[in-house]
Image (cartoon, rainbow, N blue to C red; front, side, top):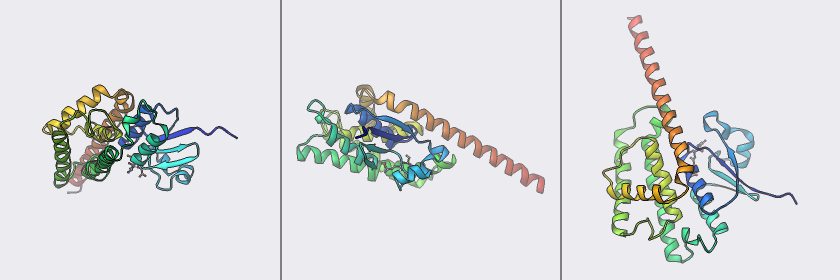
Length: 239
Ligand SMILES: N[C@@H](CCC(=O)N[C@@H](CS)C(=O)NCC(=O)O)C(=O)O
């Protein structure tokens, strides 16, 4: 039988991909990197759509098991690859696990959702975000701040890092990439600094992707400015 490896389809400029990448590293999973360039629409190519009809990254094919949805992949990797030494990343105890799952779902449905909604015009067109959508983002960051404050522990679910911290860190790196200032959420800022200092895979899995997004947004903003200037000149000439 042919050896089936773990393939990781990803794009470094994607926050959910960074979450899965950090998780693969945290559980010491050996994997093959399969870069899918979203800017070249490689995710829409027939071979990829056959693998994942939703054509999203991250996607993994783990010994033939194909999964997408970053947080589901993270839970799967933990279920499959955790050892005694790193089981704390996704505890088995139902109450402890429930708390981790709660944060994973908060990240998906509230925090990352708010980030995506607010920044969509900037990421896709280099346009300023809609101010009214910022309220949703601020509310989500405020919730996170309160969770951290009332928890009174260094990480989201206790004394040790879990996959919930990894997922939320990935979402926060999107705020870094979009140069959004979250300093006024003091607990979030301190927790994110703690994660960046103490989680060993942060730099390798996040920094390049953050810079990619920064450069891409700058390019889009410059293109938009040039386009607007061209239209302005054209309208003057017409008059
Ligand atoms: N909820 C999904 C979101 C995945 C997602 O939307 N990925 C984006 C990149 S950040 C993507 O693949 N976009 C391309 C597309 O939807 O065609 C997850 O967490 O994995």
